[in-house]
Length: 298
Image (cartoon, rainbow, N blue to C red):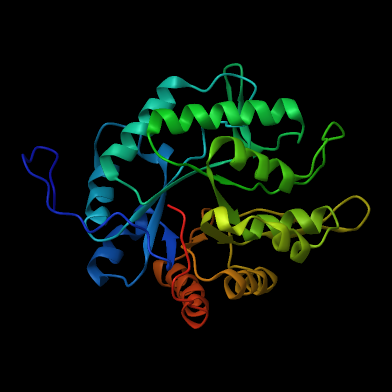
């Protein structure tokens, strides 16, 4: 295993993330993954868990990176926030990209800071011109600092802003046009949002610019009801992928070909074989819908 005191690093496998299924890397799974040499396409890590200079998190991640491609997923930049981006945070994010050479790099269309407060939730933005300009300026700054293309993830939502003047899809498409960023398509978020707003997830996905998608996310959600007794879904990441989300995912892959697909399970994390089984279910869908020559955004 590579030690930070070593003068030479062992050779890593290639950085490119294949059009296979992957899983979010959890520290409690690392030893079993390495011992079993798990047959999985890639691992995704939350950038904020690795912003220290060294220690056990980096030793674990370097051991994984020797054997698997990585996707680096940020959750704390507050791309949609009204404040300027935190330059220290952004510089640490750029250093992580240089250090681990992830095949994919992504962030959320959300905000999570206000003044000196940092929130645990990824909060929605209104879809208007002011928010669009702000988000595009922030993405430009991120891509210039990090030196690579960023993927922007569609959010899950529970309320709609009265001041919105465009749809979420139009907002995402215009952001891509102005900044040149790519997209991360979270199909669970689509199902959650469309259920909560009583819209068609199928129609949303039919209009989604999948040609700009570099990665897909799948995860579990918690069912609830609102004050009127209507279905309300919470993007919980604490259970298996729902059958409705699997159906939407299979349709997307049938229409557009395989793309790197992550299983997100961040709360009530199960034993590694349970998480691996979810990734294997996605892998089976990818395998039977493989289309030679389909492009992939990196």
